[in-house]
Image (tube, rainbow, N blue to C red; front, side, top):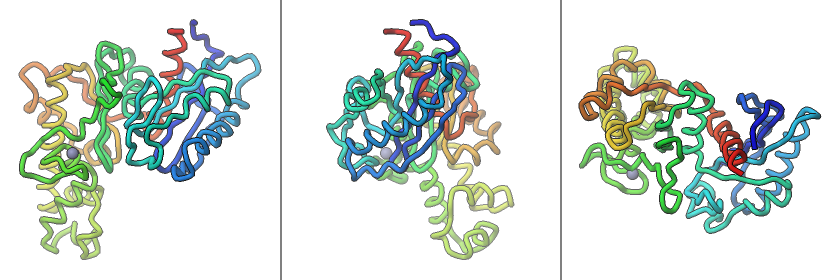
Length: 324
Ligand SMILES: [Zn+2]
């Protein structure tokens, strides 16, 4: 099937808090956007039925002469992309061993393709972001957690059980902080938003711009405050930012050495702080990669914002429809 301009994909993005949907054309333009709360405890069937209504509303905005190639669904995982079956998803409690693929497909009368949100974010970057046509691209999201998606030789790397891309648990610093899973010194435990805040809390001395921003209570510190206080000359915040850049660079360097990507894109809330130190980050990534690996990397912050996984879901549908 070739994709023409009047063709659209329905796209959905399922997170632990919200489900978003839109009708997307091949250029990434969205219409009929909508959102509902996920409420995973109401069950996957209930979520599928509410998503059906959301998708039907989006579909109703399609121009008269258009066709819809199918439905792409981006979701928090872990998930098996072929069947859409969840595997103990921490943010979707009660959905283990279940899939909404057959129910959603039957209700909509369209094929449904499902992928992990970070993998689809990487896919979106190769089509709608700064790296059009990239064949080897890694997307790393740094926010409450650290996750990633990998495109290698133009294919999505999904792994034996669909769980590839857990870049957040690469060890970056032994004997340092643990993540919630309990791995020693991993990327997520030492460079996520909460990790940055905790590192600053543990160095608290009650003085300077950071203490002022936190209102005198170290419990109020956020990663954003740490970056802002560093800009204002706060010594502790500057140390934490330096350490964060180092930890991020060790994580990214490991990925670069293994996958030799032409592009590496960073998204998530922490990227706004990192963007102010981009030259330093780039330099440190090069230092932490094998000679000749880091220098050639096109390292960018995502421009696709919160839409990245939704666009990836649309791209998944276009790509799979072409292969039918
Ligand atoms: Zn971990």
